[in-house]
Length: 199
Image (spheres, one colour):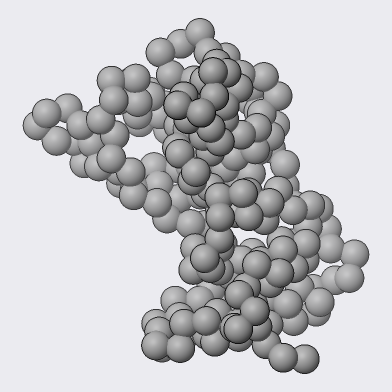
């Protein structure tokens, strides 16, 4: 499938995450108009290197893994800019960039998580472990975390990715995990030592 891309500096969107965006550049106003008219999602990919540190063409400075973003709310302002809210959908891999339009687009293939060979009980156990570490990491926000934490382990992983002090590279590593168990294990590995559950 071909999707328009919205590259963002050092940002990695996970499935189920809600992200507010301010659309002001002309090319992304055009992108927004296109997806609003068609109802299709657009893709969010991370800008890995800025033009200040790399002379590579723009499409070679962005990641080849990303997440589809679905617009759930859009408010157009008098100056033509827009404030929008998107939610992360399916993960994808870029097969081929198309830099010919005013905004970057790409041919992508969806890359769903593979089945976990250890089964759902192992996934659920790691999800509980990760939630415990989050509570330990943010002791002053226990009530809010317990209230906001999703029961679905996939969404809990996305929730944790937003709360952990991760580098963009670590976020992308977690997004690229082959299975949900691998993603949960990656996130657990990124929990600061002082907040880890003692086994």
